[in-house]
Image 1 (cartoon, rainbow, N blue to C red):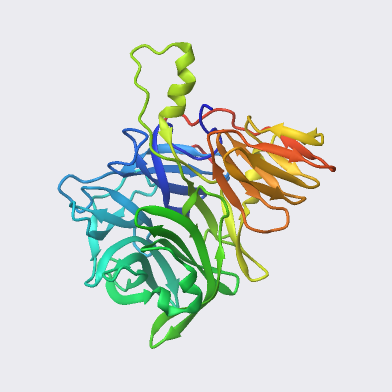
Image 2 (cartoon, rainbow, N blue to C red):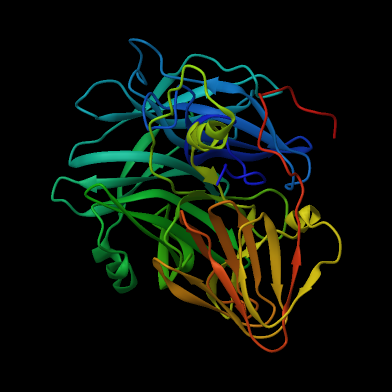
Length: 424
């Protein structure tokens, strides 16, 4: 396997959480946790890519990185787009010392989002909070607030609430949610930190997305569906149900943002362990595939939409992604088919995926299976839970009577060096 080709990733280096997602002007922009120095988690900066259509992506130079001696000297961690300023702006968690107490940093950018200011600290970790991270800004009742993931001093996960009446000086409004806040949140365990909280309206309801971190172990991503109500002048979230957002083993830290479409735009991290880059003084032709596969780690999912189906939070493939499909597809006969090439399988009858190291995945009629090197994304035809997988060995598609079709995808080459935005 030589590396993913149509999933968004840097040309080389490390990638994890998507950050600062926004529709700015006529382009969609995604920033991401990035180590340009190698395919391992260290010295985290913000990478940057943009798209005119949510199908193809242009990589841009690294937006910004740690500031020596500054509030983000040990990393520019996850964060969001910050509306309401005269210039484009983002907010993120900054770490300055090995004590790992975080602050919220704000940077303003140029109109093309290619140049960024030095960081300004707008909030600090409050008393009673052991860890705080990953700001998400939300507008409600004509006011702006921020929710942040946290671990309290007693070891419980939490969501904190800040007021943004002054975007340069955030007001801490207290612990907003804990597992004790509502019965359904008791299910958002095991976790010591509720990471990357995302609070967005979906139709007439509100959805709170939480990535479950438990003592260094990255767990599932869940979504609480409920209502955002006013209580003594502040917003209060009243969750009614909790849904698993992705049934695979490789999905984490999604962002969900409004971009003018009917449903929030979502992208998540397709997890991959760090790796030591291959070191060869004079690589032979036999080494090139290995070297290419080892010069990067991590990619983002295909663009998705957060939707409600029968009141349940679900992820759906953004229709624009289907522009990558080339042709009408070739019929697959009943039987076994090894998924070794990039492409999309569209299931017409009953089928399932099998893998030597993972449980089988049943595929109802209408399911789309997107394959890109060692990444597989499954969008069930019955509207049930999406799944994302990253596994070293190829999957096998078992097609029953009724068959399936297989289509190649474009582009057919991995990302190239960063460049300026192309005309839309």
